Image 1 (cartoon, rainbow, N blue to C red):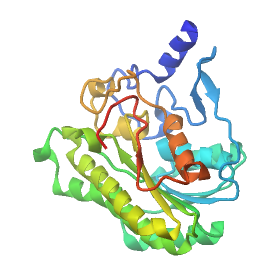
Image 2: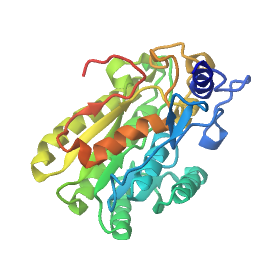
Image 3: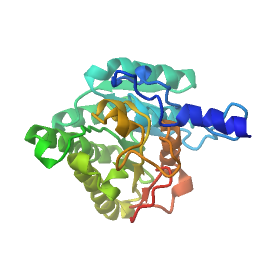
Length: 307
């Protein structure tokens, strides 16, 4: 058992996650160690156990923004393994990562449509939704997961352009996607928004990101109160520190990546893996969470938050 724990720690610990030069990885393929998408921690010799699907989302059609890497990629893969047809949206510059997501989904027996678009513009979001709905035959599940984050020392260092970019990506796109997806969603539909533990603990070096993710929580609650009587559930996932390109490329210092600094450390003393977060999305998308709406799940490595 001790050997298994040592192996798992080596895979997921917050050490050696950037090179000696302090380089950052913008593509998931460049991250070392590689994030896990379809394996979960287990008390086995290898320290990991494959995700075991059970058809929770059989026949469902899911549209996922930010599905090219990190949490979005893991969600797409697990959704496909559970039987859903998938469409993901990604920025044109992230095509290589998106193609890798496609390969992973198809490797696990799923169907997926790739759509390149900048969702910070309403006209693009409308086009994406219409294309996805036509290709999938409707939309049962909408996952708003697009995100932008850039570390700064404090408010004085956040430019007006960065503030605007953060909000256009992290909350405006959620509004646009939801507004245009709703006409295609039946009773029984599900919307899942991605927030962050940062919104609860108030990380000062990510003020714009924190504010945008707090807005996601308020958006989730208000939208749930509107849609729950129509049979559409709305929830959020506020992930803790996770080993994804967002962490590596957003300007977090090498020391910060190793756990020194608010928002970079967990009581479990490691970063989470995308697969460990994606299971929360599977739960919220399935009928197993039929009595849950307007809520936020907190897969965050043991960080205690006040909801």
